Image (cartoon, rainbow, N blue to C red; front, side):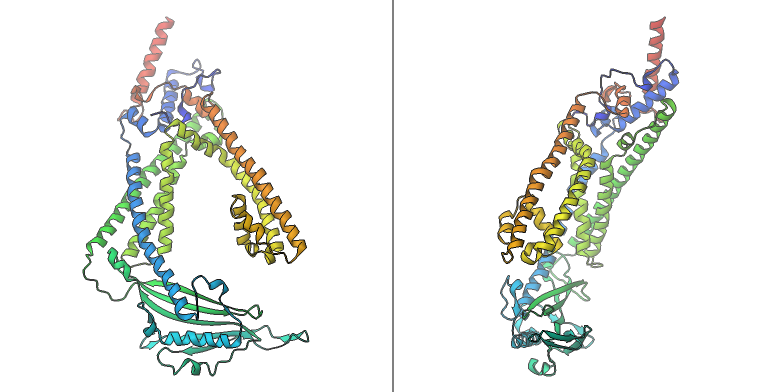
Length: 559
């Protein structure tokens, strides 16, 4: 296996470094310098080289491989369980739309609206009627919410301006902007009829802002039983809104539901072994222990690197009268170890939440999925570290690391231009193009144009109601595409390629940093045996012997 880092490669140097002047250093100082050099060189070795150098088994490497396997299995298991939860939520939302929205068709929510006063009353009457007949019409296990011995009522609320007289024909109006709310409670299975319930509820269409119908239904997700998991109990707060804020003659109707997942109060499952649930919890505990071990080993390595940085900084200040640059200091801080520490922390938190979910202490599926998903992502990104032990793969990692500061500065400048186009497109094209209605959709549309996606529909869907705005849209879109695709993206690629060429030349040339020059003086190979530690004093045992032998040989040759 090839060496993984350029920091300890053997270079042929033309000039002498400050620490190469042996005439003014005593043998003891030379031994200390050589010892420090080998300690730093050993720190930058890859696991296989460390094994040849000291016979130390690559425990961190083995642990990371095991951790990747078990964390991936854990993520797949939780993903399948979470998918059942998401599917149950989505299917219930679709069920409520078909049950309570009159003449609803799949995919027609964007155009679902009413235009006549009679239609508004008819739709409200339909919702109340379907709610009262829920037990007779639903094919699911839906049930009304109870508050003690009584059912929780359906709430019908109307929001409207407090007072107002509007005469569009005379172009006059008088309005009180204060908003009042009037509500009606309808109890399921106890009211006479929906028509009678609405007989005392009048809608003030001239002043009405919205009508909101709210009720709570309960259900149990039984599909998890087949996967050896205890079912969850769900509370669906269904909210149906008749939106008349625009007062345009079109009242948009929307249905949403807020989901609250709770532990079922009383349950009994037969035919399924609870042992499988316990095994899953034990597997999560194994992952927590593995991550804690990995976190401890990586934290120790980070601390060792910082200690070596202090030793090297002290040596350069005392013996060379030089301050170590920040780039050389950062070489001792292994970013891969930091990434592993972060991923282990996220995985430990996610595993604890997963255990709490499986034991029905918590039901925070979304929070748990964020921790587990992000932790697994960082674990798999950490695999790139081991590819870096091969020189041909390592050049990619070095290029990304070296180009990162320039890329960040370039993105900051490009983001200013991007935001200027976002604000301009939103304010000018928003009333005439659906993709420019909000800043969020404008940003998504422009980002798609940069990647060459959805370009023709963006041009085509521009409404030609205003010739001036239509001409402006053409200039706006053509300049944006030309600027970002042909100039900014090209410059971005140039930054990466220039950095790649620079790194490639550095790998075949002379050392460029003081730390590399310092380590290039060490010619000892990992399997030379000089890196083994003396168990008594903790320093390189053979290092001192070798230096003494070289000193005696030099005295003999001079004599």
